[in-house]
Image 1 (tube, each protein chain N blue to C red):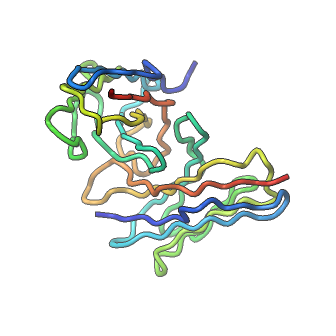
Image 2: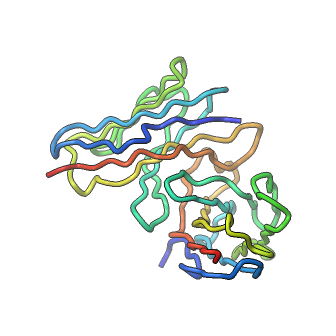
Length: 116
Length: 113
């Protein structure tokens, strides 16, 4: 399909394990975002990429969270030493050009992460 | 940082009526404001973007207004249908040159047949 694809859709991990979440943005989209959405809340910004450059990581909750987009397309969000408070839906979004606030963001359906 | 308030309680509207959702924000006035729809288990879907100099914008049965004096946006769905039932999210630029969006908690809209 032509939309944003995220995998896995569901991930269950034990506290202390590392997890990796993948995002395939729409082909050709320059901007890529990661958001975290808790139950009953709106998405909260985590980090932003413009091509392969991570321009903003101000929303990452701790140094256990790491994101990369090495070739400017696929992105991976990694969480090390997971904790129960990391349980949430992780959403990836992409937009066509640089000034993302002026454009629609196209979201994937997210990865639901549950930490036991 | 920007704060957004949306009616947090569910909004029940009878089919065929107009649904009106409110988004209030504090602090600075953004140059752009966006509305998204989110269905259970799915990612948000973009609906409309309105600029600060566009007091009103329409798309089919949807209408958005943007009042920078009141720091408020209203989102209207006319001739509402049960298929319009979803959570509607208001989103603004974070500010400070950042490119991410700040989202409200969303309003859960239920259209009753």
